[in-house]
Every structure is written in structure tokens, then in C-alpha cells.
Image (cartoon, rainbow, N blue to C red; front, side, top):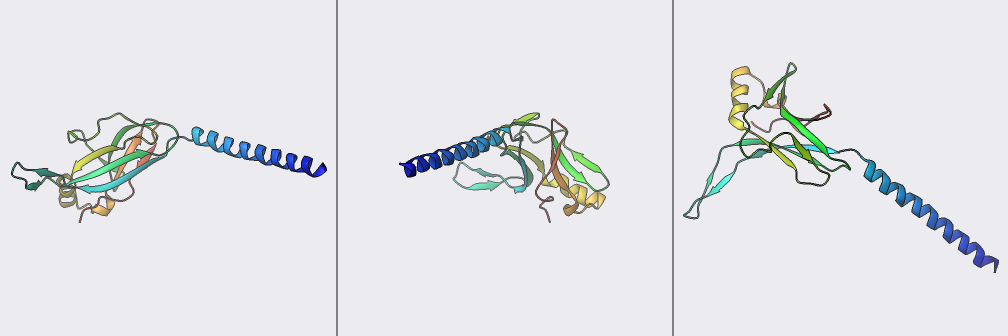
Length: 155
């Protein structure tokens, strides 16, 4: 009889420990703030023609922001950081860029911000700023600035 009591107590103890562990994990996941990732990519859209062929569009640099955290975050700005604490801010974004402000929901669709590659090439030519020194970023409503995962991917 004592063995059954001991096994029952051990099972109860294990059950309580597991409930606390998984309960805290659930609470921690819900209490996490936003976790924002910012990717920088090259983009060249293609357009299908009536004859079945396709045509390449203009070259763009895209900035994609996604939230993998536990709470929403609002993107209020974005641009490209330049040397000397300067920034390139886009006042007339491409019409298919995500409009601002934009709320990133946890696990929701990412936001896409786009700049024509020619604008960045113009900076490189006229001001001598190397592409590796151009770093896209986003700004959140709380003032947090998040840099992209790489510099502008042009050469």
C-alpha cells in the first residue's frame, strides 16, 4: 500500500511541476513585447504581357518588417541611414509601399517599404557614399529604431 501512495504522490508532484512550467511558458509568451525583424532585399518586379511574355520593371530596394513577438508594434517611419548621422527619408514613397503609420501584429503579414534603386545610385554617384554605408531602418511609435539585416544590396 505504501508504494501506491508514494507513486501517487510522485505523479501528483510531476503533474504540478509540469503545470507550473507550461503555465509560465504560456504567460511568458503572452507577455513578450514585439520582436521585429527587418530584412533588406533587391526587388525587380516582372509584368506579364498580353502575348504571354514578361517584362522586367524598375529595380527597387525593399525593406520588409515583420513581428514575431507577443504584442503589436506600430511602424511610424523608415529610411536609409547615411554616414555622418544623416538620413535619407522618403517623402513620396512608391505607391505599393505599405503606408504609415502601420501596425505590425504578432505573426501577421509583414510591411513592405520600397525605394527606387536609382535614388540610392544617385547618392552613391553624387555624394560618394558607398552602398555598404547605406543602412535601411524602421522607426517604431515608441522611438525605437531597428536597423535592417544588411546594408543596401547594390554594387
